Length: 437
Image 1 (spheres, rainbow, N blue to C red):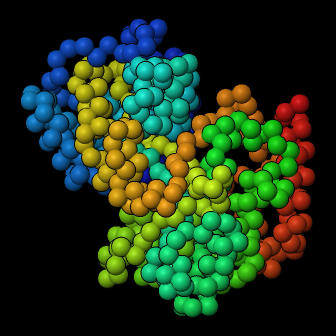
Image 2 (cartoon, rainbow, N blue to C red):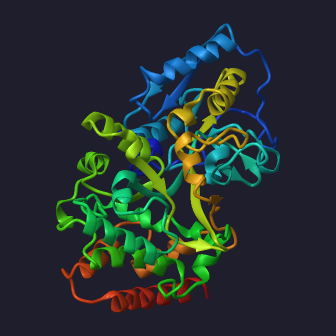
Image 3 (cartoon, rainbow, N blue to C red):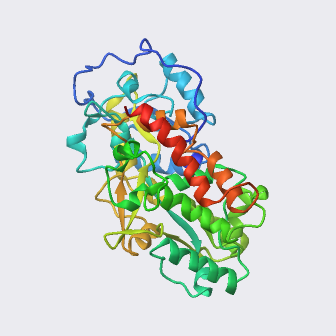
């Protein structure tokens, strides 16, 4: 089973702290690019979190690389507990030649462990998703693919309800779910409340406002749950879905794995996830004897300037080890994997190389008129949002307050939409005034 946590490498945070003394090789730390000179030959080891692909797909990519560069050999080391184990390997100095960057490694530590690949100014014309791998203007890793944010739907069920194009407003979306409820036997929307993490996906749609600087502006807003603002738009739609009884009857019994065949077969019509989930639902359709073509992907129902906008972000980052003894071949493999292997296409992911076409599923997504938008992390207000989250005790990036919101919306907890959002604004505003003073 591959869920987003595997595809994007979202493991548990390693407890081991990386210290300044855990440095890599003796490369020139002032250079914009590592020394990748030398012949492309010999053996390299690639560390990967994709243990499911180590004996299947990845060796096929390696064969193509070895054919392109005779005299090379690529071996793979699959690591199940990737973030914890590879972070430990970083501290020990032995972490292969090419590796997926463990999540616990802070951006200001990248230069200790990974070779710089060039400057962001040099590489931005060729690659997407550079911001998370860039420190002081240097790029230390490349994304191996990206995902878009939106709704995974069963197109057959939506069509039975008379809807074949994505709704443009929250009101149209709710009307569509009501039509599904009235005209089909499907559950219009499935929250995945119990697993929790899918509820955090409701925090990933800031791009709908069409403003790439939204993450820098967000901490400056003391009341983001006011009508018309981003948190009201996102969370308000979820509240209204549940309050109108358009979701499963008992959210306490939801199950992520079970939800896949449910949407694949048409028992469920809609789930808010990311494009990473589309191939999983299509595989579930195939396994259950349903039609994989029934699975579609639609944008969040909100338009700015008459256009849909969808947030995109990068997958796990891949880097060249600073301790590699074969950096020429390591760099060649990284370039090949990102640009030529076909990995992103096979995963139905957004290719990191700008000149490569989107996979079929995402071509259909953009054909609905969606503009794909990267929303870089805050720069001027870097870290401020996390400070406000901590002080307000509102887990904006997690599921807890949204689970409570669902409980309020379904009548299992006291309050209503206005009172719940007013409380969120009150707590957020108090913390925001302290952090942003």
